[in-house]
Length: 417
View 1 (cartoon, helix red, strand yellow):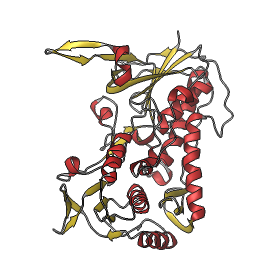
View 2 (view 1 turned 90 degrees about the horizontal axis):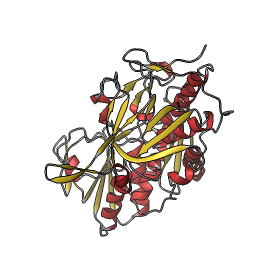
View 3 (view 1 turned 120 degrees about the vertical axis):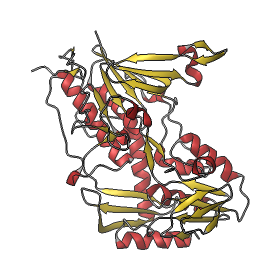
View 4 (view 1 turned 60 degrees about the horizontal axis):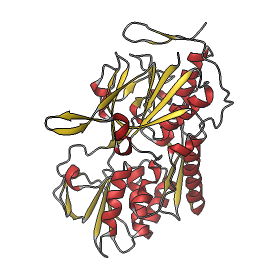
C-alpha cells in the first residue's frame, strides 16, 4: 500500500515540498497529492509588478510537475480533521466535474470531498490582514494574492493623471508597492503611510538610499502615522487627519489562513501551527507545517517572520524530514538563519540589506542598479527552485522502509530502526 502524502497549498513552500518529496521517494511507495485553487504557480513576490500592469511569465503546474508523480488537485481546502487524518475540499472552476454537484436547499452546490492522508504537509500560508480597521475590508485593495493584485491592476489602469494613491504599511511589501506604482505611473500622486519612520528597521545606509529613491519618485511619506479608517476616497489617520485616496493599497501585515485554528492541532495565538525543528506538529506528528502557516523558532529563539525567505527553507526541512522518517535515514535539522533582505524599489533601483542570523540589520547594504539586478536574480531563483526542488542537495530516491504506524490520536510514521 502506498503511503499517502497530501500537500495543501501550492505557494513557494507547498510546491517546493511536493516536488522535493517526489524526487526523494519512489512513486511505487508514495502517492503525493498537491491541492491548490489555481492551476498555475503564483510568484507572490512579484504581485506588485502584476498590479501595475506588467506581464508575468505563466508557470503551469502541469508542466512544472510533469513526470514527477505529483498529482495536482484543483480544489479549495475547507477543513482539516487532524484526528481522522482527512482534508475536506471543494472543487474550483475546471475541477468541478471531478467532484460533481449535490442538491442543497433547492440549489446546486459543489459537493465536498474528503482526502485521506498518512502524512499531511500544511502550506496554506497567509493573506492580507486588515487588523479590523473600519472600511479597510470594503474599500482597500490588497496584493497578498493574485485576485487582489488583478483587481488593483484594473483600478489603477482606470485612474486619471493626478489621482491620489495611498499605500498603507511601511514594511517590505508596502515599500515595494509604493515605489513600483510611482515608477510605473509617475502621473499619479503616490503616498506611503507608515507607523514609524521610513525604513526604520534598515541600517543608516539603507535608510538613506530608501529616502533618496522615494524622494526621486515623488512619493509623499506620512511617518508616525496610523490609519484609523478607510473610505472610498480617503483615509483617516489616528490623529484625525484626512488623506485623499482614490485608491488605498493595504499592506499592513499578513494574517494566517484560519483553517488550522479550527482544528485540534496545537497553534499559537495567531493561528500558526506549533512545530519542532523538523517542521513536525508537536501535537500531531503525522502533520508538518511550513511557511507562514508554521510557528518556527529561528536564531535567538525568535519566530521566523512571514516571508518567502523564511518559508522556502522550512519546505526543504519538512520534505527532508518526511523522506528520512519514511526511509529510515537520519532526520536532518539544519539551523535556519537569515542573510539579507532583498527589496525592489521599482525596476531600476533596489536595496539589499545584510542582516544578522536573527534578521537584524548590519551596516553593510548593496544599493542602486546592482541591487535591483540582485533582487531580480533572487526572484528568478525562487521560481526556479519551485520547479527544481532539490537545488542545493544531493537528492536521490530512496525506498520506503517503514509503514504507517498508529500512535493513538496523534499517529505518525515510525522510522525503521
